[in-house]
Length: 135
Image (cartoon, rainbow, N blue to C red):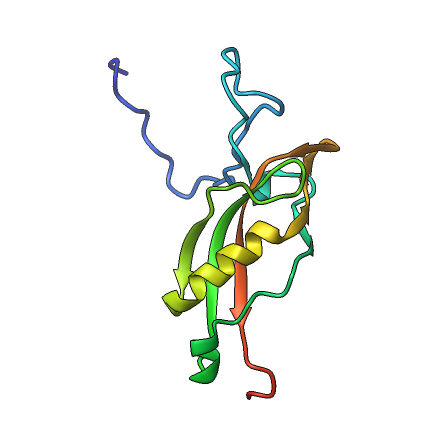
């Protein structure tokens, strides 16, 4: 086969799931910062939400009877706290975003683990805002 050419693909061949491989405990030879966060599927024990204050329902949205959901992308650190860089991935109403962000910054998680060692893990956390007594 000429250099720079890919071999032909066998149709119907097996497809294996992709699992990112990373080294626990550093970024490699340079070690110039924390390791990139693991994703949910590559850890032995994923993070779990342990405690947090109830999310504060925005009063204007409560008065209007509006329910909503915010999905956040969060890195849970090795101590079980959300790192500062939290991203709103999805929001049914931007009026809920600040309350969701405040909630996750106060929440405590059980850290994710790889081979019994706590690691940073990237997760998506849905936060639902519902009105009590509403159908």
